[in-house]
Length: 247
Image 1 (cartoon, one colour):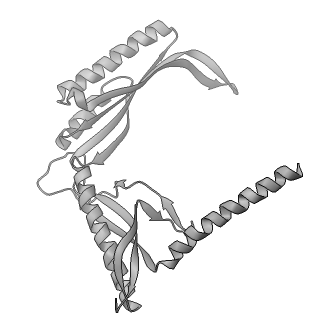
Image 2 (cartoon, helix red, strand yellow):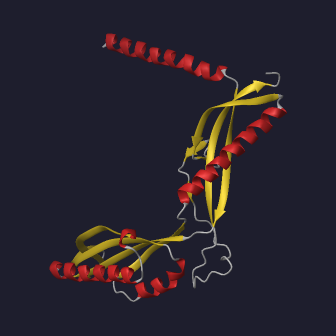
Image 3 (spheres, one colour):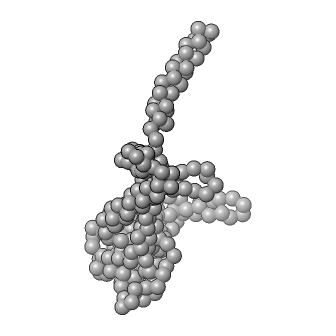
């Protein structure tokens, strides 16, 4: 047992010794690390819908038959409304026991069928029409409607460039105060967000965040929908080599 413990201690010591040169090399290179954030406000041109189709009954075959008819009616409505088949997706088609809480216990009361249907709507002007039509379908509920932009990837690329420029300008301004200059980038990370109270950086994915709605664009008639604008936010963290002013 003592021999095994000795081997473990020796191996651990080797690991720490192996990390020391790498850490020393990193610290031996003068550098500066900054965060760059860019936000681009855009008017959304796409809606993502998430719907639920649900029904219950005492006999499973009847529940299944009724559920199939409800889902078919919903898909037919979307097709009539001009939503392409490629933009419609059905998922999580489930059968399960329907349980209700009665007299301090859960009891079985027949069966339940459920299907999730999601689709995207390119024509925001059809929002009110679809909303009203869906309300007339039995067993269909709207779980979520979110705003998006059809050119999100391109807009992310543009915003990312601005974020990198902001990072370099910030590093250059900080270095100038200290009588130094900024050299080439040594490391670049995307999606790091400072969270107050967390004591550091936390991983996050750069994406389109739906913010508070603002005034709708002039000349657009969206009925009860006010799309406003959504911010595309990109955050980067860049480490630059730090040079003396004379170099």
